[in-house]
Image 1 (cartoon, rainbow, N blue to C red):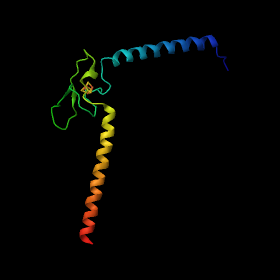
Image 2 (image 1 turned 120 degrees about the horizontal axis):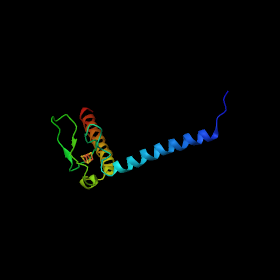
Image 3 (image 1 turned 120 degrees about the vertical axis):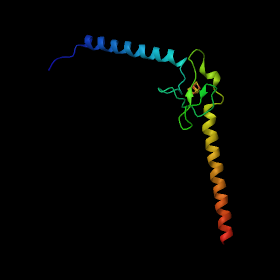
Image 4 (image 1 turned 135 degrees about the horizontal axis):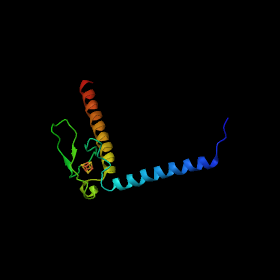
Amino acid sequence: MSKIDPKDIQKRMDRISEIFSDIVSHAETVSKTRCPYRNRHDHCTAEFRCRNQQAAETEEAPLVCGHEGEFDYRSAWESNPLLHARATKKLDEIGKAAAKRRADARRKKTD
Ligand code: SF4
């Protein structure tokens, strides 16, 4: 069994660190101009309105991101993404309460 040379390990670790620091640096640069909601097909995956959203060729197709990458994309966002989840939950609760009221009313009519 061969012995592991600590200097060789350190050399490899330094190389890996160098590679990862380049990746992180590039990701940080890209994140300033590429919206995180834009997927690799240039579709917008955001669940809120944004002025950069463009209609796709068909109604069923997802919205297309029209951001050119020349300015900060966040200024086009029209709502707080965190509020969307809260609003969706509230609408779901309202819908369930209304369905329960309708079911109760139907039950009373049949009794
Ligand atoms: S349309 Fe707006 S939210 Fe959607 S990916 Fe483009 S910049 Fe982001």
